[in-house]
Amino acid sequence: MDLTLETCRIRSWRLADAPSLARHANGRGVWLNVRDRFPHPYTLADADRWIRRAVETTPETQFAIVVGEAVGGIGLEPKTDVERRSAEIGYWLGEPFWGRGIATEAVRAMTDFAFTHFDLCRLEALVFEWNPASARVLEKAGYQLEGRLRKSVLKDGRMIDSLLYAIIREPLLGP
Image (cartoon, rainbow, N blue to C red; front, top):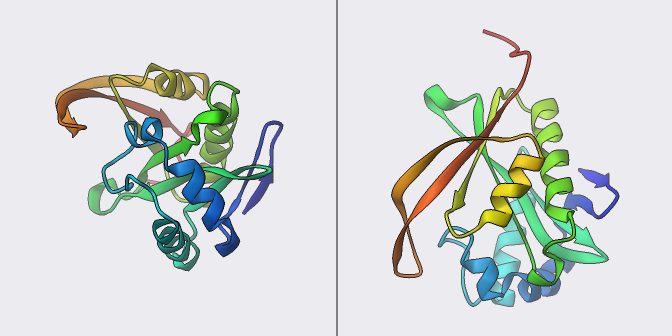
């Protein structure tokens, strides 16, 4: 995939992105707002491992957000079994790129891509309670708040709430 947007590009990861990925992913502010499987500190070895996994996955579901170089990531985690027509969307940006509308534009584009290229009728995202900027990104991209999951996340030694946002593909296709 390679989408040129107004503020950024979304494209497939490349092995040459590893130094940029390691640099932009290594901020504590980034780590505070993502799952713990996202390492901190984020090393060049972590970046290399992630990119290799992303490019080897079929179908491709993880992409780089590029502003001159890879400065963030966005992707889908398709669900299985009875939730097989749903997926979780996740995204992050290096801290110097926050507040510029990049994440909102990337989420809108990825949402369109997901509904066009996958047999999905629902996309959802979890936002940690201390991250209202990410909640606003989702709202501006058309996602709706469905609920607060009280004390559902252990992050940085604290039990916190998470907010569940979702968007539904209309009209629903298929059975």
